Image (cartoon, rainbow, N blue to C red):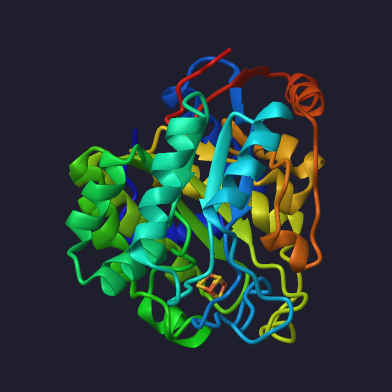
Length: 342
Ligand code: SF4
């Protein structure tokens, strides 16, 4: 498999759409020769929307004094988990705002009690900015926080908060968020402790093609070192209800598919590329399977972050399976470790 250096990867943006499709598809089948496409039956629990980081692309956060602000108690989270499990949810994707009023113990208790009460549920929780917050409020090292979460039952971490891993972009769209180096450092520590994580990218705002390639190469370099990333997921920025709403419109379907293909080609050491059908719609999700993606991600029984940016795509298990079959592939259910359940 060819390894693209920075300049060669940048030139991929000038390639013909169909050449990209062919090349990305070749890499996809070299990595996963089966015609299987995986998905996970999960839901998003957003335990708080209070956040002082105020990222300009975010429609989800609220000030602590806002009448719309909330923080769920552990009991509320447990009750919600019970209802969701009864609905057939197999994985909980747990993420929240960076709420400095929450105590460190809350995060540990949340994981331990969820694992005690629902041993069959997978808990996929806390992206690097939340781990960083836990480390700051507890005055403990990142490693110690991650070990404590592990001891309470956490095994996988979502790759949120990466946006674009270049400082120029981060300073403009999320100046109060952790740096790209810190995001990578937390993932490195997590992988070395045994965690498996995803990696993400949010594009379609102020980034350049150079920023995108730089982002991908940083992820690839860390993956060479640790092998801890399970999959790469990219989605396009949704401007509605965000401070960046006047900056750019929605990414076109062809630009989205190009990014899926380029990420499949450049991330030669990632096993899986996820198509973000929930941000781009079901038809584009199906097409992305021909541009290098081999995973359709979440059913997302409940999702708040995209919904508040005016974007809502939902599907049942049967619908997702049918979408995959109609696109010419075989649907398989997986867990956050990408182990196929059935
Ligand atoms: S993206 Fe996350 S860190 Fe940024 S404002 Fe929204 S909730 Fe806070």
